[in-house]
Image (cartoon, rainbow, N blue to C red; front, side, top):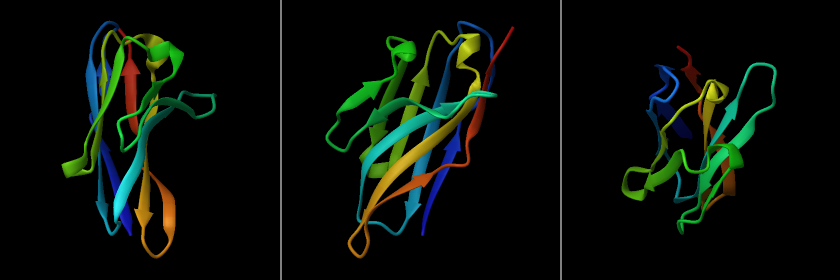
Length: 120
């Protein structure tokens, strides 16, 4: 069984910063892709940023230049540094982890979500 735990959400004023963390634990051989998705009220969940095991990174256009995704493979943890936050960044942020198990191959695990609210 694999667990994914997020932390770091909260309330911040426009222009402020937050850092999200997501740690994976449990039984798996390796982790490939790690990513952050978000879902605003009344909208579908969408990709914010993604990073693979070899360091390839993609961002959705609306966060480029403001958000930075990184990972610590030794800690099985992915981070999302969010700067210059805007009200439209308000959403529940979900961590996505793609793990590999020898017995069953690749599978995706989602975190429970952490709320980020950008408001004055």
